Image 1 (spheres, rainbow, N blue to C red):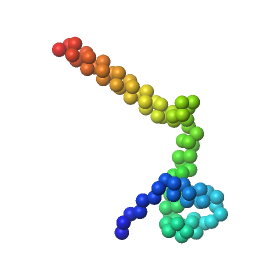
Image 2: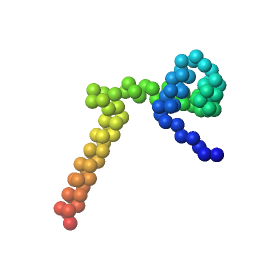
Image 3: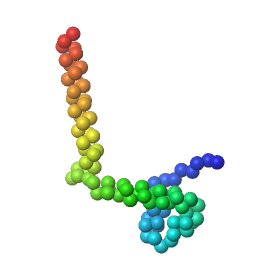
Image 4: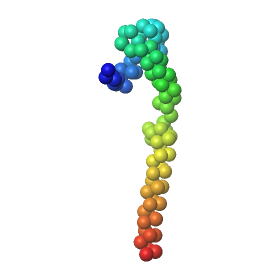
Length: 90
């Protein structure tokens, strides 16, 4: 049996319906031809990641991404310095 792939848009649609609680998880699963546990999993993942949407700075990037960019710049600068010193000391 081939494993189905679902788009983020589809998952969001199902999760938003689940959050409205107008139907049970079983009813939603039947409506979209899914297992009820799949709907529960997507709902849990959505709720766990929801706070990340609001975790942005004025630049529009999440704080973690800005920190990562800063660290990558530092690594690049250190690599250039290291390569320069290797050439000088030869």
